[in-house]
Length: 351
Ligand code: AMP
Ligand code: MG
Image 1 (cartoon, rainbow, N blue to C red):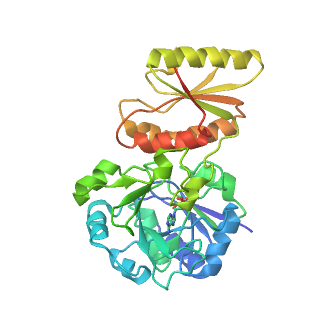
Image 2 (cartoon, rainbow, N blue to C red):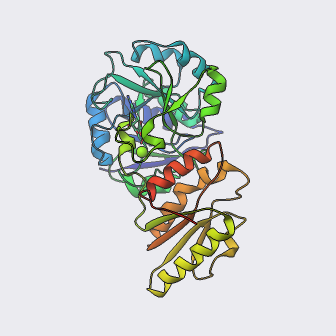
């Protein structure tokens, strides 16, 4: 398949290109597009053939449901059977934005889109290009992240091209994704709202908007939990870099000492060593390591923004072993750590 690659300036959106992308979706094709979280791989959410194509293009197991993206709140009632009061409050506080909510689905949504479930995940992105594209596509775009299954989610169009060229009809380049991690997912189908995947919108933000307690799905806080995660996608080892990744956690000085020691052992064994650090620590490592900075550790959002890009770069540079500092914080750092721990296959050293 020939993939058309186009760039769109979010401050001057070319409606000809948007309409062409919309027609592709309406005709059952696939378009990768930018959002504020990560790039999405879009198809018509109400067309089961389109959903099948998405799974094929990604190489994704078809029991892993897709998020339906809308651009207008009034479109929600068409695809869900019930809109709880909690959803109205959360939509008011966080939509458009990086929050996905799980609802009981209406019969309009094919089971191919929801991985066989009776529930549907819905999000309204804030990215202006995404919103225009969803409207031009008929209002309902099913989209997982636009990476091949198992690779880090793409935060730049060049990574979408790397994974999806020849597999989709069009790729829209809209620049770097603002957040850099996938949306927070919250399940509203039970009595207490439950976070199924942490993201930029934190537990505290949800609780402040709802004035009730919100809990985490057991499977995301307890890696030994026998309960399967409620978001089927969370059971897969996502975001796996090609290199062996180890997180070193503890007091800053000790972390740097430990990474220098372990890294030198790997260098002596002829390996290419990468380190994930911050602006404040990056100069404290052996000069023979490839050290990448996630920006200043003062702002939690920096590590979220750069993590997937750095993992991709280490892949491209054929790094053999990666050591990462851990990221502390109460906000989006929890989501960054969730992704990093998965990428490391739960390999964490405490010093
Ligand atoms: P991605 O599309 O790559 O951001 O992944 C979508 C995530 O949303 C996966 O972890 C899915 O398992 C999860 N998800 C989508 N729909 C549902 C649903 N109806 N119930 C629970 N989790 C869902
Ligand atoms: Mg994904």
